[in-house]
Length: 145
Image (cartoon, rainbow, N blue to C red):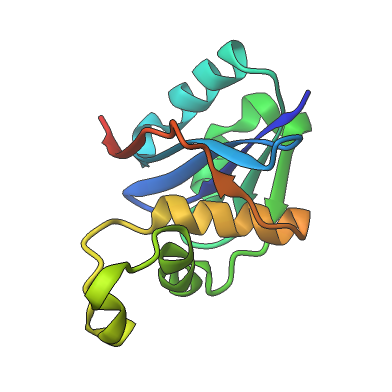
């Protein structure tokens, strides 16, 4: 089993990443409505070779952990303090500014993307004490409805 799911829980939406531990690559990154999280994780566990699910202990984590009771033995709860704040910096590492825009301070760029999936990645990276890259074929879905 070489894949992990990491979740940044939220009241209305959750960030989720699926990673291959051996390759250290993110193969899926989505933001999903909280009420769909249980079913989506269940489908991923069925379709993929997943060893564990890592979830942050922040906003609405208690409710989301209760929804994931069916994988209790594979669920790891981790600290997620400041992950959403740190996600903006990580965003620029994953998607660097190119060309003449490099001359403009990053603070002037307004990221119009939801950062929940990147926060989920940070939770995973903190747990593994390692950085992961994005698979070149990664289809980043902002919302899964």
